[in-house]
Length: 416
Image (cartoon, helix red, strand yellow):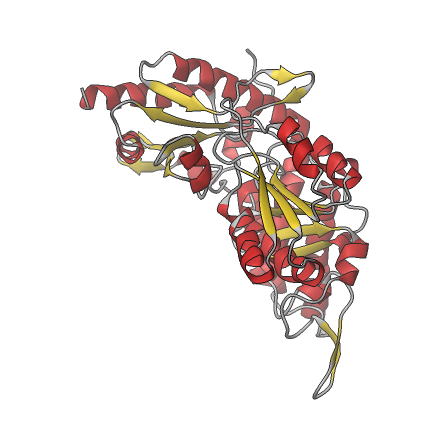
């Protein structure tokens, strides 16, 4: 196995990776599915804005305001290019993936769905792509149906085809599971949904940071993702939407910048994307978002995906060696050229609670996540209260996988 990335160069770009969590205990960060670390390029872009260009946008005509506006909109253009959006106007800045999904639920869904309509989701959804639709269902009498997850962590597409016979209005699904690491066949799911007359929404919080995502190739109607999971800052995410859909939707929030004209009793909304961006936005964060996608593009998404395939394949082999460890989700085998699993390994260890596993690993500097990972129904499906999750990104090494395995053996020894 050979590394397809220059790991020493990449790791040098992330200051936090050189710290110790306590004296003599270096950080081994295996929690990028929750949030990714930030390279110097992102930190510097945001710091420079606050030092030299800080002003509000879209309103002022002075030099700083014009500079800030240009930098903010350049961030949008970079994000649009990264996902191959036909136009930057089709990219709306939100706070995160959750807000992007809620935006669609509050605007498109409430304007288009009525009692008896059907939404298709999957059993592997993050709560952010489940709870908003439960709220819509309770309010509008909409019915929720679910694509089952098989024992090996894949979607049952035969069952999906049967559900499509009910002529759903919306099919909303995760591109990559934050628990199982399953990379779902999004292009096929979207194509079948469109043939059935449904609008499609993809939760791409875990896919856009790790694999090439092209919204035009997917022909997706809406796609949501977050900056902080792809080397960018917290507090900003994006919603891609086809222009015709966005233009027909009512505004999400009311206030400054989302209006063209306001009178005492009426208002006229602004054009997209500004119609959905009320008030002063996260300006520095948009600039940092742009710097993050430039960094990822510089490394190359194909190269990142290939390396993460190497590291998860290695991790699964090493974890398989440990008696009592069970990893959930598909194998790292490919289906043709396509990957079935991203860089996520959620596992249990016989006789030990996942929180205890995570706490003991932290003693050796290994940062993993324990819990239901905002996917409680999926854990219930497998009869689990929680799992321990190790997740990998472009800056992780095979040696760090070895430290994870070493730490799990230590857990086994402590618990007898």
